[in-house]
Length: 206
Figure 1 (cartoon, helix red, strand yellow):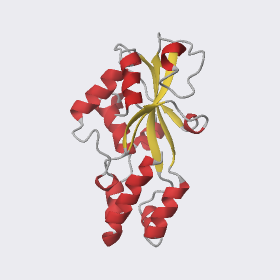
Figure 2 (cartoon, rainbow, N blue to C red):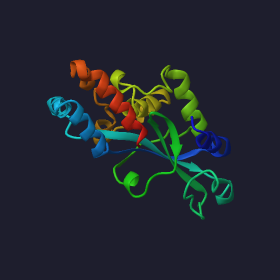
Figure 3 (cartoon, rainbow, N blue to C red):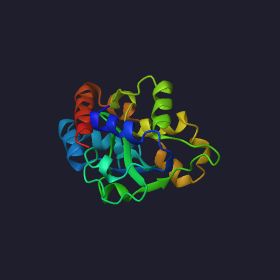
Figure 4 (cartoon, helix red, strand yellow):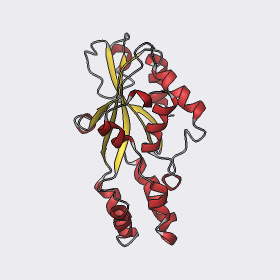
């Protein structure tokens, strides 16, 4: 995990989570164009064959209680607001590596789905991450060719922390369902290794 993320966890990782949301945004056009170019458009053909009109980068938008204020966070979080109003909003994601950062506004504040928190149990950011770390053996590994990417990471976090049963909204459940990236990549036969490499590189661009 990057140094900036570790510093954030040291400062506010023990604070209670006030709100949790699934966020998603379409994968950058450049990455898709590279995949299609390298695969002679076979990637797009397989994408639509599998019924994926759009491929999304999924993340969790976490609102954490912040009793430390701007002075503590200003050297950690880029563009930290001067008035935190007792809370800090962060993006938790798997994009080549586990990331914890401030959201890109407005892009990452548009397509959001509420994830209900346990009504009688406090949950901290440290607990959220640590519980998933112990439950998921490939926590730090990004491999789209093995279905280990941003979408599976988000669902794993929610499952590991017992948050999935709280979700009853059908749109949220649908948005949470990961694509089968392993099948998408593997069906490209001899190009699968190249496409996997490109997908992994594209993850670094997020």
